[in-house]
Length: 181
Image (cartoon, rainbow, N blue to C red; front, side, top):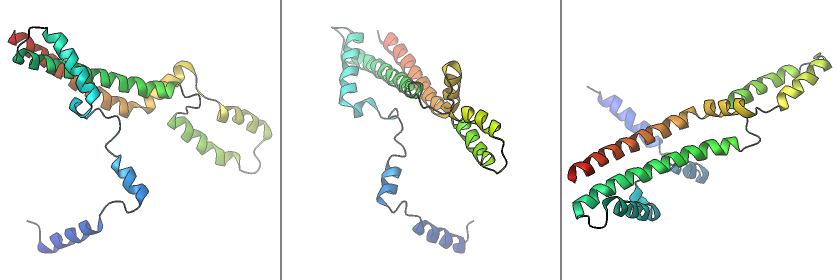
């Protein structure tokens, strides 16, 4: 059982926590949940709604009744969601791969830790020349791709969850469609 003193303290703390106060802070917090838009239903976008409806009519066929069309609509919505998820993954990886100045987070941190050591007095000039090449070098080819995958692991895991959900929804919708025929 929570004591009245604790309840009053919690209420006092909560009243002080009103969220961001500045215009920039409020704008940033408004975007907190908006990462890729994959959680939005298809009905939220009129273009996707039209695509899903056209695909549903194609799946159901010209002489489909209302029930068959509804089952086909569920398949179409899951398929459109699947395409959105795969497109989001493609955009995430393409953006990083096409960035010529891409620097992996771990590599950047390592380089930043090295700089204060180099600025100490008495560091030989020969050592500085070799380090300069290391500080300005960028990963290329397979090593760049490996760095990107490492840096984007969290986002890719989230996208994979959306993909599994869309695949599962499509699978069950197809089963319902088949059993209704």
